[in-house]
Length: 306
Image 1: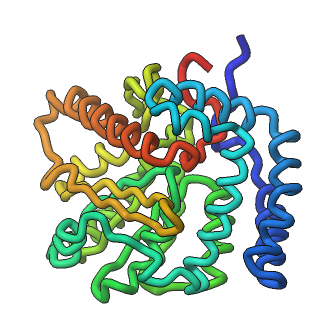
Image 2: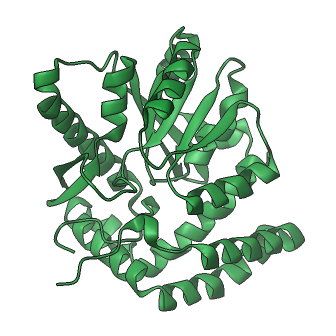
């Protein structure tokens, strides 16, 4: 069986064009105009992007046994694509200042206070579930909070730079990382020492496609999740948080969890320690996928069985 291409090699130029069209429609005609064009645009992607459509179907198939009957009735691959378009618009609305504090619910206020008052920086592990941009763009609500967001491909950098053109916050730095070189590690160490917070996705395998992954149980099947965030946390000896942002009842609910106060272990124990941490992260990702089934946007082969 032919090996599936790595996610980082899948082109997104047509996606960027589609995003620009949808954003133009919103600018000219508001949300109703956006939704008017959203359906034909996403129908085109749904029909033309075979790999993404199959990946969506496979994900929902894996997820169904974990959902109650009412949830199962309201999920489909096409609705998954439509939700992707809706969340894309919201990403831009955040950066345009159109999503206000009253549109956001901080589900774990004590943890937000903890990270705001901390003298040391931390690693915040996010995912492709929901709308992480709500978390990033709301950094201005915490005057001393500065984020360094790690991006792993030119495609992701193009999309994030498109967001930054809308509202360029000095408290958010985008750092493109292909591999963890000593220079990158030194820069990130300086960020932590200065009390800054490093944002890294925990659900995408390394761009190089080599090693540094753990095979974990995720939605009933084995999948490879990256070790990078946890190896970095062990190297930097800093706290680790998990952050998820889900759209529920027309509001964004932000969940921030303390994963580890200080992530460190002996060298001979590191492999097992990291594997355990990645599996724990997979369990939390499962939990939040069940809360918002159509909001996990990994449209590529993810499990070993695909």
